[in-house]
Length: 350
Image 1: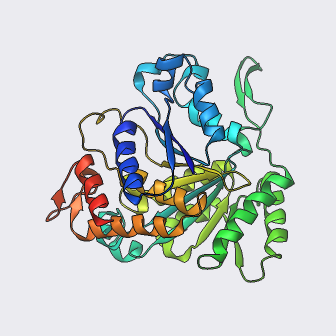
Image 2 (image 1 turned 180 degrees about the horizontal axis):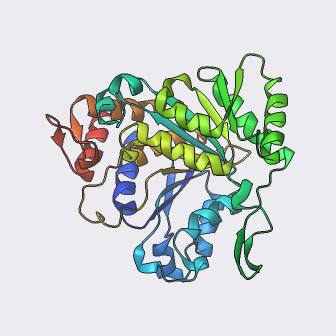
């Protein structure tokens, strides 16, 4: 198995080092090859996604990604900014399905902004379509209209794009609680009406999975009011972007949450949902658990190593039960540790 390791910027190299350490401890038949991306890619080759990095990602069976972004490059033209690397990888690799689990470890329920009884045991999977919608629809731009500037974007989905993301959600639900909630704004948007029609038709092919529909504004409210009512949420790019970030905060720390972006064959790019956090880079205090859990997702989804994935997840749970906490999840009575010590603890528990 060939894995592309793309650490990126900020805390990316620090947290990636811990995930690589965990993967090596498993002693699986894998080859790991590292390449620069984001700001590091721009420094190395004048591009946030260098040609050699993209070639490595194409050849690999899976990609493990750290984080990109650095204020030093904010004044570059948009095409050269670090964040363009992840967009370029999604497009080049055809990564259309974003899987964002939001799970609350029992030991961290008190860290949530909500009452612990509301979030304890929470286990949601948000399936977000990643390559369509208003982010990519044409036409878009800023123009002069009636003597002032006017900005415009186009929300657009093809039936085939909706079908394939719906199938990902229904297949995932079959392995979980067998419930899918499709989120749209069909009472206002024609795009959402098509979304609802197509998802309903696909749902009929999965009689063992319960399908419900919910407007996006109500879903945002329900995630705060009663989040445990959800199993799998499937939605478009714009709504998924917002709802998945909201769901992540139910867990108390984005430093705990992994994600996957998959193509139609199951190849994926795996990354923590947090950013590059340049303000704490190099201080050894970043939480590596989201990256380590992203590696576990990679083993389970793309590399057919379910047992190894479960071992990593169990080791992380054990570390939390033992009371180890990085600064972002630290509470009174717990033992505060740094990035490397947390990685070492996971390795020890394997």
